[in-house]
Length: 276
Length: 124
Image: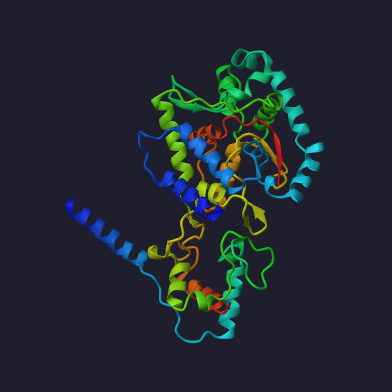
């Protein structure tokens, strides 16, 4: 019975995946189906738990991760981020206001004037260049540290991405399409690993669920030994499947982030996070 | 201009033909050395990396995305079908949302390597 349901659901998702960018695509229906899929796949895991990544699939790994999060390796990075933020405080306050706890939750959003998705990192650098300051590199270092500082101040708030125009819907559709389309030498899509086969192991690495993917970024990865942004992870993921990665903060990745963040609407922001 | 287009189309057609041509399974009984070579390719992370998804006797820390590679002769009475599956001919892509890369079609392995891996997998 369970198996039949799973098959029916996975067929549903694959049909979702292959259907063209029809005008009938409704993000909210997508999101509900997304959540229902993961509920059916693992009835014992509630949707809210997926913000903790692949660790939800293993009690052992969860215990190790929780131990690591008690004195997490990203604490210094948050302090660095705070210091950097305060160094150019007047500039940032002009862009983001004076309450640092109210910034992270606004991103990503679709800017109706420029018809582009604006990410937190994009907004930080735009704020800098508009004020005549040098922009930071996109993937690690200062930008990730400031992003971590702002995420930390927003912990517990809920992801709230809005789609309120046709142009925003088009950006969502582009991200959705990217997510579902197989690519690279290995012919893999985001969805194949992180929806259809989430919870399964590739060698000894557990594939995380796409639900909650954006909540805990930036992350301190043991593999990197430092903090990195979501788009840095996108690049790494694409290299893993032997696809040519796009540039961090390219329109493609910003649209993907927009789609992924929408899928995680209502989930708690818990960045920065520690990951293997 | 038109002749140039024709030229291009012909080139595309030819390359398309080459790319989509499946390879033929080795008919002769493979040698122990070939089977050993196939095992190396199958376990190698940068080549077959079969262990990423499949449990294989003698392989450590296998993934569990695909089925265990056991009773292969029973599951593939026709060895050619197994070659096609690993090479990645379109008609073998029948598992919905399969993670299995088309190893030959996408040039992850050479045709020889696909045959050598198949020789090994067929002993399982």
